[in-house]
Image (tube, rainbow, N blue to C red; front, top):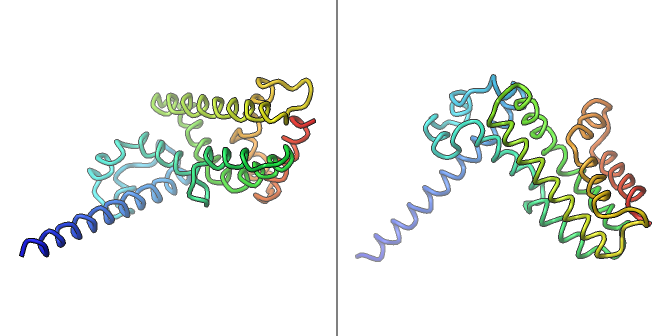
Length: 214
């Protein structure tokens, strides 16, 4: 009789994990909507929990409050629609690209997909930090440092493949890519000028190719 009981327990445990994961996903989805719609300061844990159908205690237990929510939303935004982290997809593109121009085009397509998700969250963090929130200021510094490190990684990869133009060293290439991945650029061209994501991606590919490649 023990085998069916154990099987039932395993099934129940799996169902509980699935429900908990679904609840966490709902919390993040509603938190993103509220943060981007109302701003960091005006959004409350109580309202996020109410919309997600969970208790405030569930939110605090799983995310540790609003800064933890924003951190998780920011990390999720880097997945784009592909389900793989942007860093991993970028490395895969670098390994597969036969030419520098092909790589720039792949990075442009990734920008068109990821930037609409990631840029608004980075701007949310920036604005909350500028408003005096210490946790958001720390997160902004962390995110900027990670983005800078990633651009250095990409620049070194370009140099190792011989893709950098004469006179463009690793540091300069990293600077250019850091500027092209700034959320303010997406905000200006897509948010304010009305560009389509595909136009933005083509612009990024062309700009990087002109600035970095021989």
